Length: 400
Ligand code: PMT
Image 1 (tube, rainbow, N blue to C red):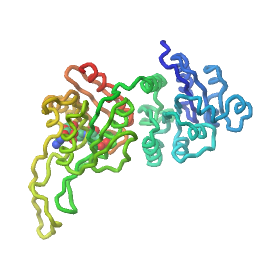
Image 2 (image 1 turned 90 degrees about the vertical axis):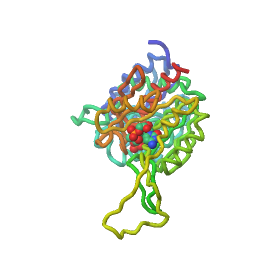
Image 3 (image 1 turned 30 degrees about the vertical axis):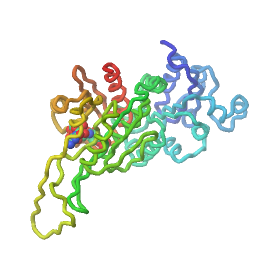
Image 4 (image 1 turned 120 degrees about the horizontal axis):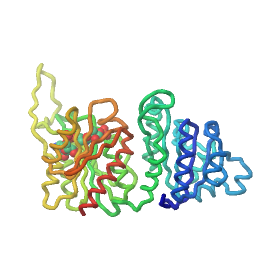
């Protein structure tokens, strides 16, 4: 293996059955040329002996904040400064909760608090614990603060359950790290992304909309930004924080979204249409609240402009990626949209089920372009977004 990762990596290990995979990650990191220091929580030491990590890294393993020997060799503040990057794998639900709250009651948490360097966590836990609202809130808040969330993967778990919660394989985590240190594929490219729903007013108090939460589009914004792009998000009304380093233009209706996009299209290299734009709006918005006097109410709906089609029809269009939200015949419908809307790539997802599409934190995408396709299997929207941006950048760079 080539020495591709000449970096100082601090590998944090927390308590979980997946801790054994971290020994493999450590081996791969060392083979890739990284200098690695390992920090383990007390719970991690119940699963794997520190000696294993000591032998594989060639360095002492840090387990205790009050360890006089360790502190005299390199105290925990120095250790935080030493690292180019911290990766915590596995990251247990308990650790994730404490990290989110800013606790410092073990050496690994203290290091996270003391570090200015990027931190990635690889969640690993039972699928129900992962799905728990508290865990999801903690992960969302950490992601908003710029912590990279790698995984989890879906599949059979040590406890016998099946679902999202398995730690990513060591090879995948190594790839994530290598990708992180590669000069951003999209350095200095201007990426415009639409996200979230649109809201079509019926009268001053009622509207037509859909279930888009904006999570997929915001994850794409973060991933494009990490790949070095200058990102502008044109966002429908959602309840999400602005991804660090990106610019957000907030809109309500499809017409507002169209105007915000078309104003910027000339200065855009790549356009990603992830928003769930309402296909119709009411022809005549009522100025006053409509009174419920009749048993029936008829609204006349008219078509909204197709924003992504307007962009691809533009004189010198940017590289364009559309989404297809389907409930059946995913491939056929997506390929038809790819052609009809003149897109460079389309990302198709199934909506209306329990793991993918609207509102969920996970997604599964089928990417199609003129002469190829790629399946991004079920994973967190953030990981899926990173994979989509990576593939999209390969296609874009091959053509430009
Ligand atoms: O926001 P989340 O809760 O995370 O959910 C993510 C998502 C399901 C919304 C997202 O992954 C997704 O599929 N977005 C596209 C939804 C959609 O409107 O699909 P569509 O198949 O109806 O539209 C096809 C494409 O045309 C899309 O790129 C859409 O943005 C674009 N379009 C559609 C209508 C319109 N008037 N203007 C458009 O630009």
